[in-house]
Length: 260
Image (cartoon, rainbow, N blue to C red; front, side, top):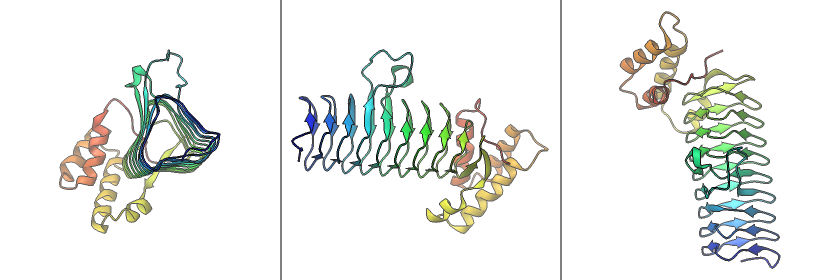
């Protein structure tokens, strides 16, 4: 259904059972897959693909030009996965050519009201971005992450899978998988135990992660690089601990958030 007040430009591709509500604008390069709902006053620009079953609430803008001084109108993209919920007054910008050309939002992700996701961000699946969060350009967020309200994440930072970022936290250094980042500037306040339990991790696995965390952050006798090597050797049998090790080693030149 397309409301009479909506504008759908020629060239836009709409799947089955798509709803375009009052005063929405859908640009010529947009693709709305089956069952997408734009409630009202939604603007979709550029080469933006919105996955099946995704719901977008009023006064949200998707796929608009990145806030980047070197952007000169290149034909870049925004890709939003299926079954996402994007609430009121959210802005998500498309990518830049120098950043790979794509901003990506994974499936089953909720972006709450008045949040901003900048160019070239890569957001995983089952992520919750609470109201008024701000993510700078090139931020990477793993699966099952929770970002608390008013949190800010500096450009190029990485947030590992199953991490928790507390409300009003200011993150300017990478956060390990399963970590709990709190404060301004943020520090690790421990592990996201609540998130791990909700995700169904066994008590034995959680205890392994806790033990590895202590070895990483509470052993000042070794350098951090040596502590990572020790954890890899001692916990190589635990895939979840190795997620942390692999995250750190994937970009060894970047620091990770330390413990309080």
